[in-house]
Amino acid sequence: MKQIVKSFVGICSILIIAELTLRQLAKTSQNIRFFTTNPYQQTYFAENTGWKGITAVACSQFLQYPGAELNGFLLNSHGFASPEYPYAKPNGTKRIVFLGDSQTMGEVPYPNSFVRVTESRFAQENKNIQAINLAAICIGPGMEKQILIHEGVQFQPDVVVLGFFVGNDFEDDKDILATYNAHKKTTHLLPFWVYQSRLYSLIRTMRLYLIYGRTSPLLKKTDTKKTGIDTKHYTFDPTRATLSTRDYFALEEKRTFLFDRTSYVYGVLDTVLQHVLDIKLLSEKAGAKFLVIIIPDELQVSKALQEQVNKKTPIDPATISLPQTILKEMFDTQDISYIDLLPQWESSPAAQTYYLPRNTHLNIEGNQAIADTLYPELQKLLQ
Image (tube, rainbow, N blue to C red; front, side):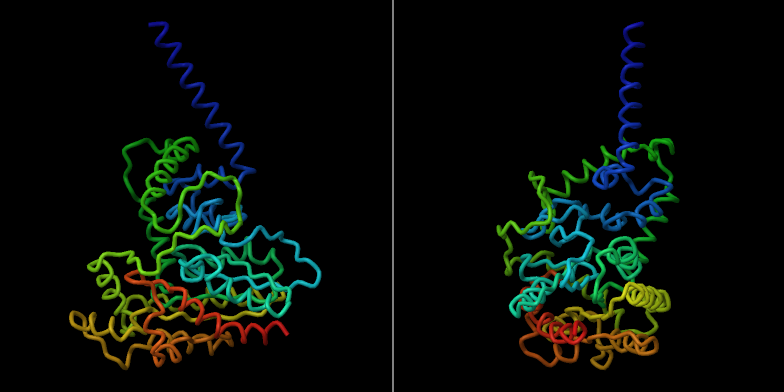
């Protein structure tokens, strides 16, 4: 009996020491804070939006962790698809900070994303321009604002570019907050204090990490400690479909709500506009110019997809550009500069193939097309 008691006390002591150690290390280590945070913690949302780096509400869902491989690029020490640029801006250098979701982050090889293509255009003209990509997976303007506050302004940007993807940016922030609120209301099997444990969170996150690392076509587990570098080893297959035919069409059929002004998604317009306006004001306060690039959903561009979806969910061709119309009306009232890609793309035969097969994200040609439009506008802003 005494041996059992001693073993029990010993195990408890080890667990307590491990918990206290993790709590102490989490104060100074971003990586440890990430791996020891879980959505059930009472302080979860406040902690994560205050990070020095990527907003972990998105990070915790999709494990966008430092050193993860994204199409041949090892995410930097803050979890972004950019080199390890110091906050201090070198003399004679100008900087463009990019905010956005996975469309801006890029699902193509690192050098083919529109952020890097744009940066390379400036390099070809011997202009010292650094493009800092602070985009993250599945977030909207509210989270992008937090990233700008806690990370972006520290890079002393000359221009801030917000990539607004109409396919889901109206509702991504709402979905993240709904998930968070659902976690708070959930009745759990374990005692509340367990969910506050850093050790419990570490075990939970590592389990998800192993599962996600085996199944994700986007982010991959890596064994190297290097971060923020292009490995130049790309496994990208532009012909590989990501979603099943059923799931893909279900997703695009759902997005027909974008063409209905009475849709629930437009009930958050004031909030979306306020977030974008806040990003503009924060950019200007930091001495940067601000530009929004409105990225269309594939359903707005692809005639073949429209015909397929129209068989089940009728689409009025006159409403295809409704999301852009609404956004531009809002932006014009607040003097927010923007580029609307849809008019050019919907009339271009080449744009019919700007998206990856059954994926909804831009392919190499789509990223190239954005860079072609964006580059001359940035030249003007950087003069």
